Amino acid sequence: MPKQVFFKISQDRREKLLKPAIKEFAKKTYNKVTVLSLTKTMKILRTDFYYYFQDKEDIYGEILNCFFEYVQSVKEDADLNEALVILFEKVAALKGLKNRQYLLDISENFNPLFANELSLRLINKYGEGCNPDKAVAKTKIKIYKFMAVLNEYVKGALSKELAVEILEHKHCQN
Image (cartoon, rainbow, N blue to C red; front, side):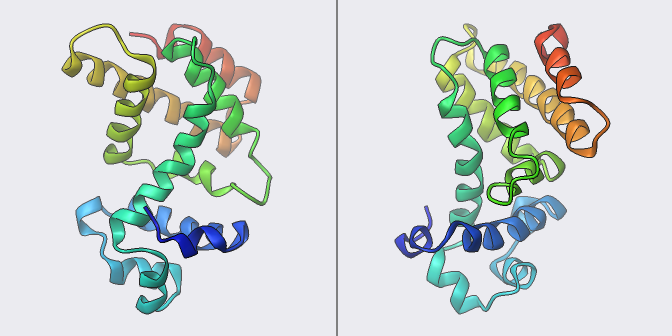
C-alpha cells in the first residue's frame, strides 16, 4: 500500500504517477520491472518515488486496487458473469473522463499477474462452487475474455451495447 502522503495528493497527480507505471508493467514482466525503470517511465526522481511508495509492490498494488474498487461496488448477489457485465459498464463509463481514465489502460496493458489477482478476488467475492484450482482456471478464462472485450471497446471496434451483449451471452461462460 502506498504511503499516506500519496493519498493526500490530488487525483490528477495520482493519475500522472499511476498511468505511466501501468504501461511499464505492461511492457515487461513483473519481475523485470525495477524502481529505476518505473522512475524513468514516470519521469520522477527515485527519491520522489520513495516519498510515495516503499517499493514496486506498492505501486502495483495501488493499480490493482483502483480496478478492484469497481469489483467491490458490484452488487453482492450477482453471479460472476453478471458481475463482469456490471464491471464492464462501470469501467466503460470512465471513457473520456479525465480522472480514472488510466483504469481503461488496464485493458490494453493486461498481464497474467493481474489476471491471477483479479481472478482470486472475484472468486473470494463470488465463488465458483468447485475446487480452488478449477475455479481459478475458469475465472482466469472469463477475465481474459472480459479484458479482450473491454480492449475492443476502448479501441472503438465494439459498441458498448455489443460488448455488453457478448458478455451477457455465454461468451464469458465455461
